[in-house]
Amino acid sequence: MLKERRNGTEQKGMKDERGGCVEEIKDSTTTTTDSKDREEEEKEEEEKEEEKEEEEEEKEEKQEEKQEEEEKEENEEEEEKVKEEVCKLERRINV
Image (cartoon, rainbow, N blue to C red; front, top):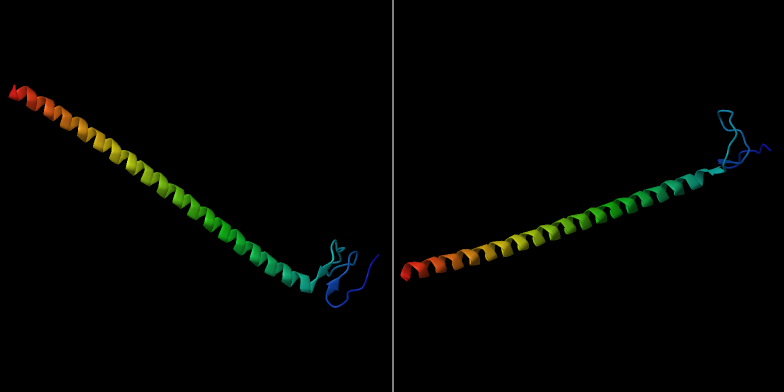
């Protein structure tokens, strides 16, 4: 079951440097590709996280704008009520 090492490649069933048995086939060329793939995956994950954060910020901004608009409307309604009260009081005084 033991096989020889060829061109930096470890074959399945071969003993590694520490005397343990190699579980998977390892190739020095694949490890560099894997690290590049991992880097690309990490970049993609970072981009996704950034997009998620941006979306959350946009949601928060929209929520704040909505709340400000509601407060503005409430203030306008309150002002109208106060004006109506003032008008009623002025009429009472003039009568």
